[in-house]
Amino acid sequence: MTRVKRGVTQTRRHKKFLKLAKGSRLGRSKLYAEARRCVMKGGTYAYTHRRQNRRFYRGLWITRINSALKEYGMNYSRFINALFMKQVDLDRKILAYLAAEKPATFAEVVKAVK
Image (tube, rainbow, N blue to C red; front, top):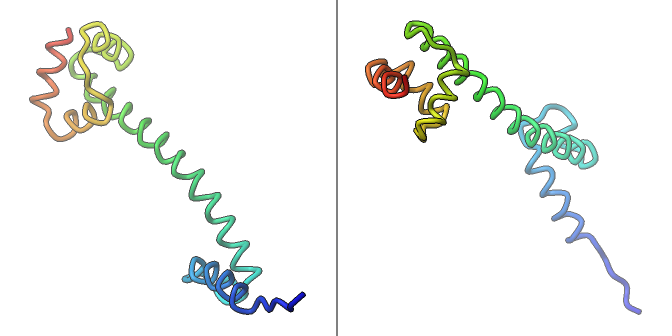
């Protein structure tokens, strides 16, 4: 059997991780083993935090809607139930935007639901 030299393949594999670890400090951006650990752990955190971000924003929207509804003498849970019963298809993101940026439109939505 002929001898296989792995220099090119190994270098390419290492460069891939080193490129992804660019911007890290000290050995994490220069040493392959540390760069690989850094990239793998970073990928895990990125995946987890993308989901946490969605949770955070949903909570923020709910808080904004609830605080805007106080002046109409309604609370969040009753409002969402009324929306569901009237079959109004507006999601929380849009409702929070209307409550913060366009109060007149939000007032119309609340009146339609009451």
